[in-house]
Image 1 (spheres, rainbow, N blue to C red):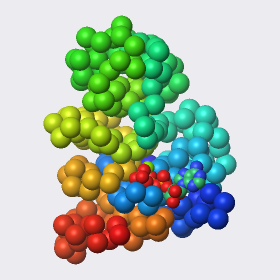
Image 2 (cartoon, helix red, strand yellow):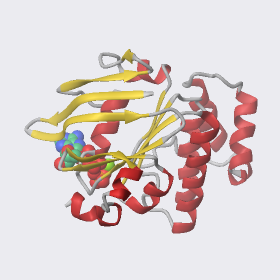
Image 3 (tube, protein in one colour):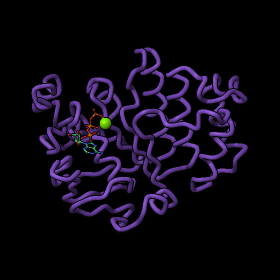
Image 4 (cartoon, protein in one colour):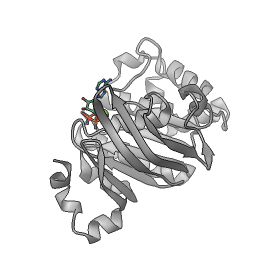
Length: 236
Ligand SMILES: Nc1ncnc2c1ncn2[C@@H]1O[C@H](COP(=O)(O)OP(=O)(O)OP(=O)(O)O)[C@@H](O)[C@H]1O
Ligand SMILES: [Mg+2]
C-alpha cells in the first residue's frame, strides 16, 4: 500500500506537482488522469525516487520512504515502468527479463518467473533470443510490463501503458494489468491521457490539472457525480 501526503515537485520555477495527496491500495488500480504536462510522470517519478520533491511524504506499507534513494525503493518493491519504453535494446528479450528479475525482490525463482512471462505473452517466448530493440511497439510494451512484474513488486507504477499502441494491443495490455493486480495483490498506480480505458480497470481515480488534483476518489463517486463522461472539461 502506498500513501502520499502533500507531495510537490518543482523544476526551477515550474511547479509540476502541487500538494498531491493520494495513494494506491493492494490488489487495486488507481488511475492518474490528465492532459499533456499535467504532472503525471513527475508524480510517478517522485514516488519511485527519480525526481526530487520540494515537500511531502511517501509511505510504503506504513514505512516512511521519503528519504530513500530510487535503488532502495526498488529493493523494497517499488517497480516503475517509465514513459518511453525503456529497454536494453541491444540485449535479447531473455537477457532483459533476467536483468529485471535480478533487480527485483526475487520472491519467485528465475525459471518459474520466466515461464510465467512466456505463458502470459507467448510471443515473447518465440522472440526470446532476439534483440529487444527489434520488437514491435506492442511487443516492447509487453516486455516493459514483464520486466516490471517479473520483479515481484509490491507497488507497480505504470506511465501511460497505452501510448502509441493499436486499440487491440491496448486491450490486451490492459487485460494483463487487470489480471496481474488481482492475482498478485500488488498496488498499481497508472497514468493515462486516455481516460476511458484506464477507467475500465481502475477502482480509484485522481485527475490532475496543471499539477493540481481536481478530483480524487473512487471511480464510483466519479460516475455518481456524473463526471466520468466529461473528464476532458476537468483536464483543460
Ligand atoms: N525535466 C524537466 N525539466 C523542466 N520541466 C519539466 C521537466 N519534466 C517535466 N517538466 C514540466 O513539468 C510539467 C509536468 O510534466 P510531466 O511530464 O510530469 O507531465 P505529464 O502529465 O506526464 O505529461 P505527458 O502526458 O505529456 O507525459 C510540464 O509543464 C513539463 O513541461
Ligand atoms: Mg508523462
